[in-house]
Length: 183
Image (cartoon, rainbow, N blue to C red):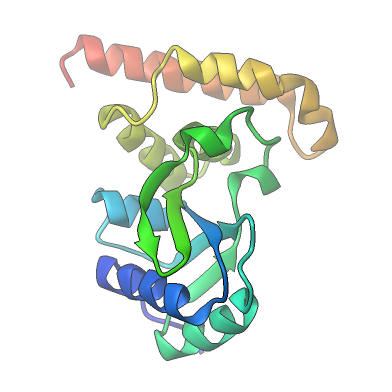
């Protein structure tokens, strides 16, 4: 059975219900479409991608129940499943707020941007453009963080480091050109 799209109201309700249903403290990092909806450059998303670290008690039981109760697709997914974890990603993750004992964060925007650039889908690249336009990422920091993970890319055999590097450079070039044109 397909689920309906997830709006900001559903994401907020999901966070509140997770905060009530889990036991003990934990951190939940939202990423992808959930970030886009909460910040406001998309009205809805198909999936709520999230990562718990550390995981609170009863987390998986709550997800199993809430996905049906709230009619939400929940994916346990984060950028560090697709590219190496960026140094300092936890510290750069921006707080959303607390619900019960859970602290919710936007997963590090640089990690989100790099994983989306690597994947290269049209919607992903539009998301990165929005992150740049909204100044959620700094163009000077993006290549530095890419260089920091470059030696670890060999652990991700599906990634071609050279083409990934070229896509990062192309996105930075686009952003610099857009800024010089007053975009």
